[in-house]
Amino acid sequence: MSATTYTISEMIGKTPVSIEQDAEEIVFLFSDGTKGVFYHSQDCCESVYVEDVMGDWSDLIGHPILVAEERSQENPNALESGTWTFYTFRGIGGSVDVRWNGESNGYYSESVDFKMMQPNGEDRG
Image (cartoon, rainbow, N blue to C red; front, side, top):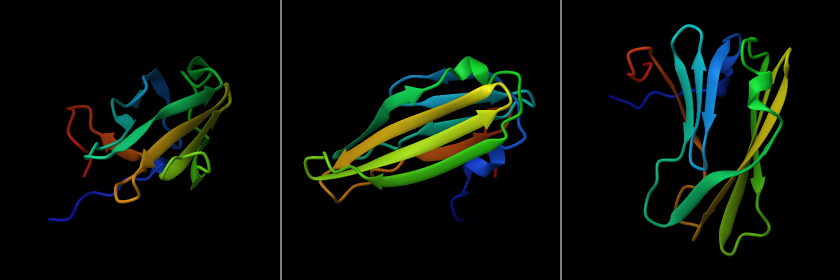
């Protein structure tokens, strides 16, 4: 059985009722009970974390997500290998831009993982 692939475009049109963020995870809880979870499946020799947030999460609460975009670029300041992953979320109440930083020795993932979860806590898929 193959792994389920999720895209952040699945968030478009959904209305967040809460958004929780720490250094290693961002969780959107939507009005339909589903969750959108940004995280990193940690392996041996990499570090991936939320480095910067511009905007106020509360501006997105109660309004449908109109834009959910992801882009990435090489982090030129990384010691060995690094990737910045940027997310933009917009709704009629405002917008939030997030930068994740991923660093490794070049042999491990520096990417951010995303999944959608059903109201019962199981992966959608």
